[in-house]
Amino acid sequence: RGDLQQYWLRHHPGAQEVEAFVAALEDRTRQAASVRRQHKQPKANGNNWLLDISIADAHVGRYGDNYDTATACDLIRAGVDIAATDAGDVGAYCLSLRGDIWHSDNRGNRTEKSGHNIPTDCGYFDAIDAGTWAIVDTIDALADRGRPVYVVTVPGNHDWHSAQWLARVLAAWYHQDGRVHVTIPGHAGRTYLQHGLCAIGFAHGDERADWSAVMAAEVPTLWGATRHREFHLAHIHKEKQKAPITADRKPGCGVVWPAALCSNDHWSDGAGFVGNWNGVSSYRWHDLYGRRYSCHYSAALINDSTPQKPIKKQANQLKAQKSQKTNVTSTMGRENRKKRSLVAGELR
Image 1 (cartoon, rainbow, N blue to C red):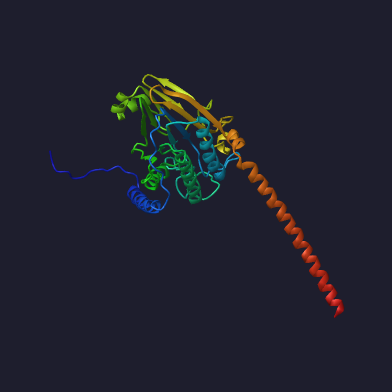
Image 2: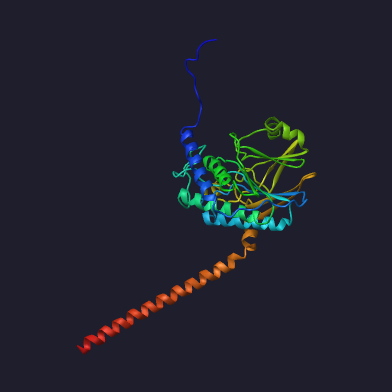
């Protein structure tokens, strides 16, 4: 026993500055949220179903095969809407944002964990604005269906800081909303949701772990109160994805990986990770009998099922035709002015 002379504290560089920034952002968001339209408390409907809609590895800001920031945001909005409509009436929704929502985690276009410099199709703040509003629009659309909406956010290896502040900003934005409930991830980047006798764990999955043991150790009370348990991950859209939904059933707890939202880029093509599905996955849970249905909505299906596409195409065609007419008119105007000037010169 003696007096403490020195100690070593392990922490992330700049962590206090980031926490101060996020706290200020939360305060500003709460003030702005006071004027937005709030959803009322949903009425009890006796429906036993929970629909979990997964947005995994969206990589907003990434430039890939027919993929960019605008495409990613369109797929988020339309994919969630199609999944919710296809499921029919349910008792509640869960929007699980399973990490790597953004492609880079800072304005230097680098990943948080590895520090790799990665190509993007726009600036960091442009990607942040586009992705945040796509998620807010999606949450509002689900809440407008009249059911509770649980929002789960976990950090990925590409967007650890961005996912942390996203969860806190969403919680501040919806802090007075009667239908939207936002879960803040723990310091380890994992979170849990209970639906009746079902326990669902969420993590990005870039770390290797015995997920059944992790759930039993971290939430023993939840483990003991439930009968159907699964860990839902992401991350492997490049390494292992062989089917839209891959499941690994272990004693006590299953592990499930959905498809990634993003398509390939030059790196994944060169590494041979080709031919994978990309899109939105959904899981329908019964409070007594566990996960009963799993659905996958590919990017091609989402694009073909979105009515805005042909309308947007027609609008672009009309805009091009109008531009051509304007160019022809301006050319004719210049020629007429030249003729008038020549005639005026001859008269003089």
